[in-house]
Amino acid sequence: MYADLKMLIDGVWTEGTGARREAVLNPANEQVLGDLPVAERADLDRALAAAGAAQAGWAATLPKERCRILRGAADILRGQNEDIARAMTMEQGKTLAEARMEAAVGADILEWYAEEGKRSYGRVIPPSNPIVLQQMMVKEPVGPVAAFTPWNFPVVTPARKIGAALAAGCTLIIKPSEETPAGALAIARALMEMGLPKGVLNMVFGVPAEISEHLIASDVIKKISFTGSIPVGKLLTRMAADSMKRVTMELGGHGPVIVFDDVDVEQAAAMAVAGKFRNAGQVCVSPTRFFVQEKSYGDFVDTFAAKAKALKIGDGLEDGVQMGPLANARRVDAIDGLVRDAVERGAKLKTGGERIGNSGYFYAPTVLADVPDHAKVMNDEPFGPVAPIVSFKTFDEAVHQANRLPFGLAGYAFTNSAETSARIGAALQTGLVGLNSFTISMPETPFGGVKESGYGSEGGIEGLDAYLATKFITQAGAV
Ligand code: NAD
Image (cartoon, rainbow, N blue to C red; front, side, top):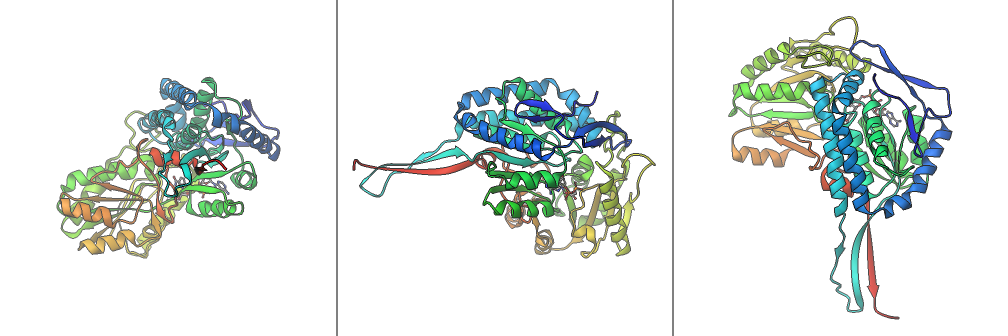
């Protein structure tokens, strides 16, 4: 059993009004797992009407009650961890160990927002004008949200948007990825089981452009939250601007990793390989450009390549597999193109550089050394299992390389010098910085980029704030 593929509109699980369906594939063997209903305009209109009608009641629901529902859903998801993880591995390809971890973190995110929703405090501001009796700032839910999530984290990304929006008192319509619907559906089922009122959460699937165009143009929707590629993020932001809707954009990056030569090469390479090939590199904060100081460079490249080559690749459901297939055929073609381009431009292929097998979207963990700046892989987000490594001499040169691109999501540095660590943390133009660590995303911490990687944060108190509007109320004496 994979998942019951339906949409949730106005509290009803439905196949929608149309006949269109989209197949969900297992990327490990290209077999069809199920058929997903595709929303027609009439279905979207029902979801809009439901989210609009439920908004006032949900905003007025006590934070304590919203907390009860979200916490209860988190517990339900914990009880279903194994089933959710298996479905995720089948539809997305990541290893079962990674999927179990992600399903657990999804529950933790709902629980964190369940609690934090009780703390959307305002402020009482002492007046400077003597006729004013009281002035205060209060936070109110922004209103119905349209949210769009991609295929690489089928539980965590929907959990961030659903958890924060519901905790803040917003209703929402979410369109999870059609390629990986099971995790978001599990979250929706858990919330409905806890008694979430109808219309508060609506979940639709279909043709992404059709859905985003219709929802973003609607007067009902007051906020857009999108996670995905930069071109699509720009398109949705432009559409949102027509009616001045606020947006949160979590877009791609091209994460630099700067390895200074005062660190243990073996340990740094082991951490880098684990970070790089997690979810086969299909992670928006994936380390994607490695800059290694010249004294350690040769050792680092050899150690990294040996460890990458030793990874066990296969169906993520199999025991001991350390990297599964890529999520779809598009990624295999994209990665192969980037590797060929780099080699043509003079990069040295240390390992990988080829597809594996005849079925499934497998690609060997790939390491490229001495990659020239103008190679595409040094400029376009790779989103796959390829690690380009180049050497640098000075701190300034490394910073220049790291900040050279228009992206600014995650950046990493490895050093044992407190001074270098503080300086590089300040110098990296990214929204997230990992110093001697690749772990930069937790339920309680803000997550988001700068430059073309988007704006706004998810996670932490910033993530809740994204769904709240600030209202100032001033009150003067009797008139
Ligand atoms: P894509 O640009 O076609 O799609 C990215 C996501 O946006 C998908 O989930 C898709 O359903 C959605 N989307 C596409 N067009 C849309 C529209 N008009 N309205 C609403 N949603 C829309 O690319 P892809 O092949 O799925 O992924 C390729 C690239 O996307 C990757 O190279 C990576 O850069 C980026 N990506 C980023 C993230 C992230 O976490 N930031 C996740 C997945 C993909």
